[in-house]
Amino acid sequence: MGKISSGIIVLDSLIDSLYAGDNIVWEVEAGTSYETFVHNFIKQSLADNQNVIYVSFNKSPQSIYQKLSELIKQDGFILLDCFTSGKGKNDRAFLKFYDHHPDSRVIKVDKPSDIAHFTNVLNSLEDRFPASKYIFDSLTGMQDLWGDESHTYKFFTYMCPRLYDLGTVAYWILEKEAHSHTFKANLGHITQVVLELYKRKDKLYIKALKLDGRSNREAFKPHQYEIDGKKISIKPIRKETTLDIGTKLKEVRTKLGISQKELAEKVDLTPSFISQLEHNQIIPSLPSFLQICNALGVNPSVLWEDSIANDESWLIRKEKISSNLLSEESGFRIFNIIKNGKHSSNIAIIEPHTRVKKDFLVQQGKELIYVLKGSVALVRKGKESILNEGDSVYFKEEHPLVWENEGDEKAELLIVCL
Image 1 (tube, rainbow, N blue to C red):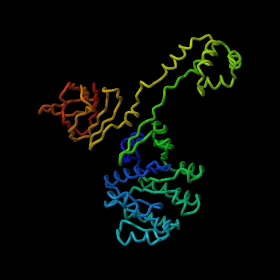
Image 2: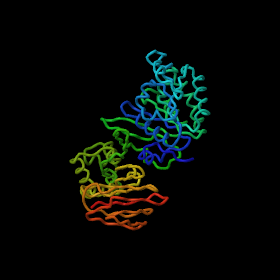
Image 3: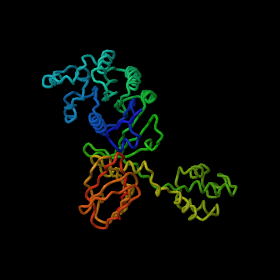
Image 4: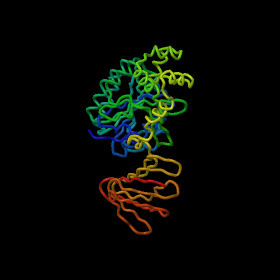
């Protein structure tokens, strides 16, 4: 099945895009701004000439119009209002919306608490609005209205395979703390993708809990994300160097034929302490570490240097690079590889038939550019030159302001700022 963009390049890179048939359950905590992920998906779908059916149980039509004002005006946006006659209880304050917005693309479900009625209305939209993407704004709101997790689960087990067979993509929003572990686990068995958004000490994180058909495991690690307006950046969490002292101590101890109990007695510690230390579950105090080294007859500096040598901070995986989006324009993206003071290296991708007026250099200095893939034309001092794969240019002062990819394949450039 074909890949479909989420509207967020760094998310597509992290999870290997969305696929036709994917149902994506978003387990979200309060304050994680999940609406921005939804907004970008809607914007991308409409740009791809796809209809979007927004099923709202938790928000009034007026609030949706306010939040999605620039998108809702487009022909492909359809709002299925399950709020007004649901949680809104047909209050006049909510019904007044229809006096001022007689829009055929806003459909009020008269009996959203009747699951069979709601399902029939939803299914009837398939013929009226083909090739649609779906947003279900709240599995939690469904549960609140329908009164029991089993009803929501039964609807999901019916609708999720149906949407899969239609080859569409659907977002399902679930408030993380409002449901039982069993309910969430059952949903996870049926759906194709589960993404978790959570907040810790004012920092936002995203992590995949399930990704059907993807081999890359990087997304299952927590990644920090930041939101600037409607733009989202996602970066892997930087981990401190792990010192593998425990494993080295165990190797020395076993070579000497000393048991954990015997070593513990020599240094006046417990066997449990030695076991935890050797499994790197704890870090010893400096006096204890020196005592153990003395009892084993090993130089402490050797163990320390070996542990530092095991650090792989020098290794930069492609998944990390693709999540470090530095800048983005129409048909053009730059990803940072590494930055150290005024020195940096980046990857630039220019899409086919794209003309870019750009100086790649972030700050003044020398710049080396190597063509990794494809070919590009550059204009410098009024003269155009063609660079093919394997060619490079070196600029000391004056940099080109125009780059163009005239081919049918994307061009990739390695940029080193010196």
